[in-house]
Image 1: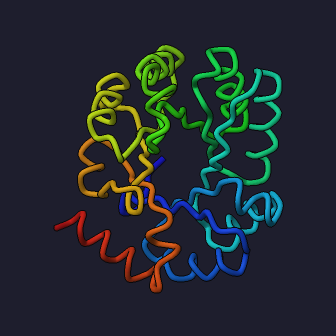
Image 2 (image 1 turned 180 degrees about the vertical axis):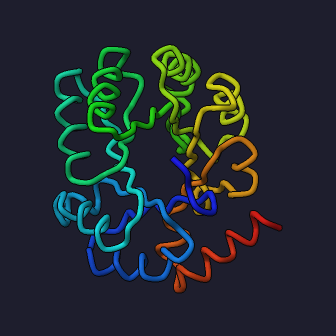
Length: 216
């Protein structure tokens, strides 16, 4: 997956009108959007299809899928059939559950992103000790897309070393959580930015500033 300007907008708002207002201001610079549970649950899964059709963007469904293999398969199938191009899945649930997601996505010519470690402090207790193992499992399963934290550059670098230079890493935690896009892109292929853009008085201007910071 190629990402314009190496930035993914995390559109974690809860109303379609607000989402569209933000997209109107930002899709000049962006072609990839991450949509999670807040907007999907508030507006229904058809919001994925609507945004896809109205803005012609790539959509990553951030559902952090984490169930048994049979249930994972159904979640991935349903989500991707609503128009998402890719879906984020947890790795801690193990090889069988991850493979179910991978196989279903590939049958639909879509993609998965394997979540190795999260960006918030609480992830240090349970995910951090196994995140490199999750990344290694992904490599062994032939997974090429990963999620790793922008807020912990040392961890992001270690995960990059495990998955290799050819893997595609997207990285959350830029902006409000403290990560910077320029630093993150030393190791990641795209930075995920949410609140600092969609809570801004001018999402367009904020995004322009981030793009300039990357190039500067």
